[in-house]
Image (tube, rainbow, N blue to C red; front, side, top):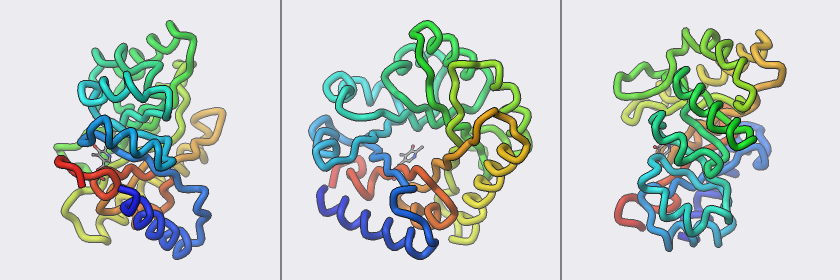
Length: 228
Ligand SMILES: *Cc1c(COP(=O)(O)O)cnc(C)c1O
């Protein structure tokens, strides 16, 4: 796994250089959804403190053992009835996509007296299988999040289509960046929405070139289902 980290690091640096960006502006989330407890511990030992999981059922045991040693990011579709399980454990939710979820997150966070960092997930590609609010509904959705004081909107998140040309993927990522700029131009929040959570194993370099500040890497870094 160490070799994966080293190789990926080189590719991240090259992508930053190509696009005139600072390496420090891109953070890596190691997605451990298919990884064992031991592999997840290895990720932390290699110095990557950001762990991404997409289902509470898969994360539970790993979090119980390693929760205090990293920062946990919830990157998958979050069912409203799972919010009580993840709140206070996952510092960041990358999949805020509907009002009912916002309401529940705010309520549970308030009960614990904490704030929760959120990314609004946007379905830029429009694929039916993907979650996220529609790009044309983003402004209105963001406006409706303002009354929730426990939610801090860090940025926007998207997933590019898996089998698409580089040009199509690039288009998806650059659209997400434009949507973020629009939120800030319109001053929807009284703070700047700064982050873009986009890019996975097969498209992270394009994402970096288009402005990603968080990339979510599973198979290339940690391993696919059976581990690397
Ligand atoms: C699984 C997953 C990833 C990581 O996928 P890889 O292709 O293995 O890098 C990133 N983001 C989300 C939302 C995921 O579900």
